Length: 481
Image (cartoon, helix red, strand yellow):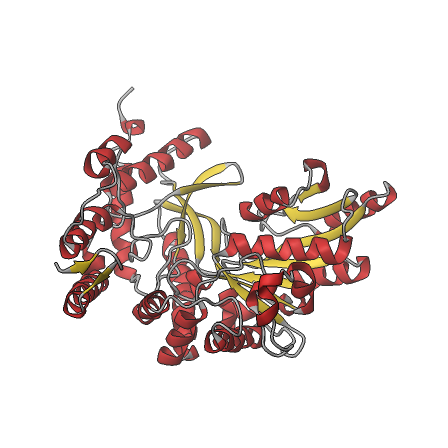
């Protein structure tokens, strides 16, 4: 393939050929991924044997490199957009956003400042305003920023809360969260320099919601000890169960106590588009800051998180720096430089994929897709409750359901049931026919399904349950003593 090694370029004809080859591969993947196995399994030794080599000094044919990647790399990667990918939080994605991502990368747009990319900045302003309206946050004072994911959004939120509520001295500051709060928040808290003794993990109730009484008692005790309660993290859809904390009541406590109210809606926030989800998420509009993850239930490709705030000036007060080399591109107050609102200076044009997909499909299509996941989980719950083989451990909530294999005719102990459900998950994963993992609820090992992929069908779930039952019968628990 002709190329100019001095300028790292291909001929126009070869660029088109390579591009068409890539698009053909992506389209084929989108059309056939339901026929593939969702889970990739391999050892480090196997991967080393395929890929380990010294960096080549001489060029290779670009089409051959692409073919190698498609055949050897992409086929050995777990497909979180697969209809039978139930574990963790799937990433369903959509093709229009893939094209948006490709355009943003192909044009190599720098989305940090207004002067470098006014259209990119404007589209981020517009799409952030769409989200502010969806979540009931003030459109004039409110603001936000797209991030690499929920982890960076939570870090940005907590850094802002620390700055606004504590200033430079946070030695006596205390932060509150529940035992179901996502681990990214703990990581962010530690990155920000807080010690373990400044973190209060509040127990949840039987519905895995933060206990209001225990929270109030903890805040009162900390104040009596001369400490400074400054931030509370509420959950709008936990990863484990989809549970939503009592957001309205928590917001009242935060207002009374002058505490920053951050809501982690990275998983469940998008359910605001659904009537059922909106009802569950009542009070989310009271947040001082809110994390949502478009690359989850807004069906965007990785990486795309988002932080929304009640007052955008809190972000600029926290993150704005004025080095000499940026003086010429500061702009006026209406021309937002997004590097002033978060951690990153260099930022990719993430708003484009979200903008293009919403413009193409319309919000109503997203509303239906989100609602279908909630309805599918509720249908699964009803089906499991009618079965003599299965037990619902925690009901369907925001498209997450936890259950376990528990045949009522068998007299199995709790430890045996734990062993059995671990075995089922292991066998399903080893078969690579579905991605189904366990979690722990009420000291029980349970199977968990997260059903946010709009391309997951009832038939997919039925096939997976049948597979689980077949593996259950192979367990050593049934061996004769």
